[in-house]
Every structure is written in C-alpha cells, then in structure tokens.
Image: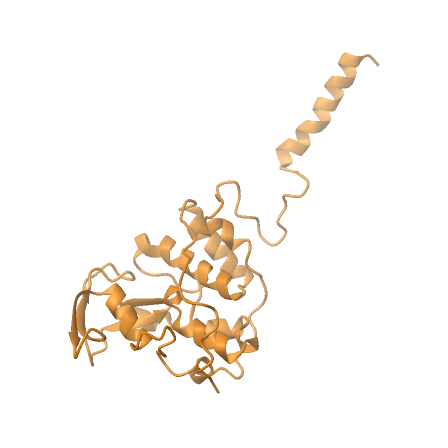
Amino acid sequence: MNRRTTSALLALVAVPALLTGCETGTEDKAGGGAGADAAAGSALAAVDTLTVKGRAPKTGYDRDRFGSAWADTDSNHCPTRDDILKRDLKEVRYQGGECRVVAGKLAPDPYTGREVTFRRGRSQVDIDHLVALSDAWQKGAFRWEPSKRIAFANDPLNLLAVDAGTNRGKSDGDTATWLPPNKSYRCTYVAAQVAVKKKYGVWVTAAERDAMRKVLGGCPAEKLPSGGSPTEAPPRFSAR
C-alpha cells in the first residue's frame, strides 16, 4: 500500500468521528456542558462549576435557622431590609434620619417591568431572597454553621426589592420551577442565582442546572455578579 492510499484511508476513518461529534474529554454525560460560547467570567461558564445533586428533604427547616430577620450584619446600624430598600428604590423618603425607609418607588420592578410604589406598612414591595432560604436549606444549608446561614440571609448579593405579589408567587422556586415574568430580566436574575450558589456552595439539581444553561445560553456574555458581604456573620450573631 503506497503512502497516498494510506492517507486516503485514514481520512475516511476520521470522517465518522467528526460527524458524530466524538472528541475525547468533552462529553458531559449529565446533560451537555455550557459550550464554547461560555466566556471566562460569564455566568454561563460558572454554571458548570456548581455541584449537581438531588434535593434533600425539607426536614428541620425553619426561618429562624437563618437568624432573626434583617439582622444588621454589616454594623451600619440599619436593618438589612432598609439597606436594600435604600439601594433599590427611587425617590426614597426616610423617617428620623437616613435609615428607616418609609416611601419610594420601584421604577421599574425587575420582576414585572412595572412601576411599584412602596409605602411602609403596606405589602406592595418585598425583599426577595433570590435563592430562597428553604431552597438553600434543601441544597446544603442544613449542614452549615449558624453564622454562615445568617450571612446568607442578609447578603446583599442575594437580596432584591421586588413586587410583593409576584414574589409570593415564586415562593421557594428555583430556576427550573420559576422565572420572572419580565423576560428581559431573566438573564440578570439567573446570573445572580448562579453567583449566590457558587459563593456559598449551594448545590443545584440536574433540572435546575439545565434550566440555568438554557436561560444563560441566550445571553452568553452575561457576567457573573460578585461582591456582597462575607460568608460568615460577625461573632455577636447567633441562631437557634
């Protein structure tokens, strides 16, 4: 067999492998990787760094396991809820200084795209945990030290002022079961969930991972958010 014949046979052998997409080391048996479009530093690339496991039972979950609501973990003498209202609302009005927020506007509300008016004592605006506390509990938080759970519940990276009714419809849903009705916000929303889960080591289910990939696949350049507070609350805080 001459050299020309040998080269031709090798080329024919290589064609089926190219057609079937076989390439050593690139197969994701759990449902396909994020792909070449996932740029370094993107939320899409970060999805594949999350641990994938089944959801644990909700046994033992209680809101109090994450400390008292809206603890002042950053020691600025304002409850976390007011910190987030101050950050997210426009036309903010205060009572007795610049801590207690009594009025303002979500313009727009990220979940619906509508303008929502906030007035203290009414229920039109909620502070949402992007990754719900009970979702986190079932995906690793049941094992955490109290200081980590308190930090998680009060981390600005995981908190957002939103329309109350829409938020309550979300309940403790993850990306696989709930997305904001405002489609233009979905990339930002899912990227934030990925960032929170990566920061705290909260795992995802296979269905959740696939849903994250699907949303972020439409916006592969979406950056992974960063920042927020430390992953442990100051020693003075404790939880039952």
